Length: 381
Image 1 (cartoon, rainbow, N blue to C red):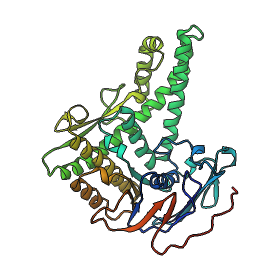
Image 2 (cartoon, rainbow, N blue to C red):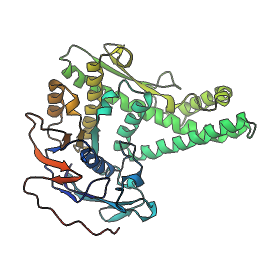
Image 3 (cartoon, rainbow, N blue to C red):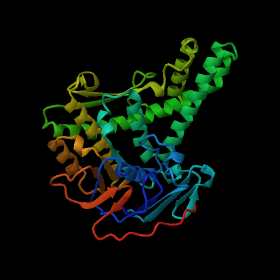
Image 4 (cartoon, rainbow, N blue to C red):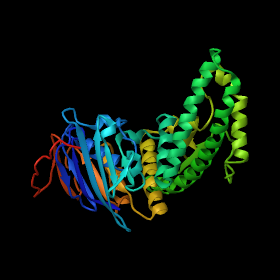
């Protein structure tokens, strides 16, 4: 898949942006704080995923604007799709459209535009907090199984309710028996998430291991392992609604006293991790910066490859100021491995030997050779 048209106006500092990107490499050049990352974020938002910068939807509207408008035309092997969004600080006035059909939320677009984004923060994926790796795995799975995102959200809501109840029990406001209904829901959802995550990490390991071997010239071997706080082993298990759910429920009941004491749920999929090793040694604890970066890049590239395999479509790649953080060998490696995919690359300056369609960003406006400016549209939803 690839984007044939993209426009944005009022999204943060973006003004009257209109682009017809190449189906190959697109290089977006500009100084800091001119809107390069805002452009990448705007494209990413139309994938239906949460902002990779943690921006709340209403905060994407520029300070001096009432609405932010986004529109994107996507070409796939099966059809052409049009994704549109009019965002407002008043969420009741927003409008989301997929091929002209109204969607209630931006998440209604999820699964149409499949993107893989690389940011400087992703280079710390292997040595950062477990939450980063859990979020990464959950996003990867949701791009293939959109329903998984809803299951994950349900689990987070149940966890929030259970943790609130634990505090109330400690204060004598509620009874421990009130946990039963939440524990049963958490066990069922948590067992399912555990199985799906484990299966995905197994596939991720296969792709990432091969990629890392190429980066290291075959001198080092990458290993990935899903670390569950509930189960000793998930190999060959798929009975999430049966024995695995019961085992999860048993864990919650056994830990109930300690959970009440500390005021939160100590074990569960919300505390799981992905262990990353090179030659059997933890990269997080003992790896060099180069090993951590190579491992992180291998995992992100593996995400793109798995998307290709599972959906039969090449995803759109967004590289937000990442290449400047890498040495030449890793930079060349990542571009080579993404060959054939549509790529958007932001950079503060021209990158030698990087060919592609060039765009310049300045003051929130985007220009390309031969582009004529359009009049700014009226300020209406």
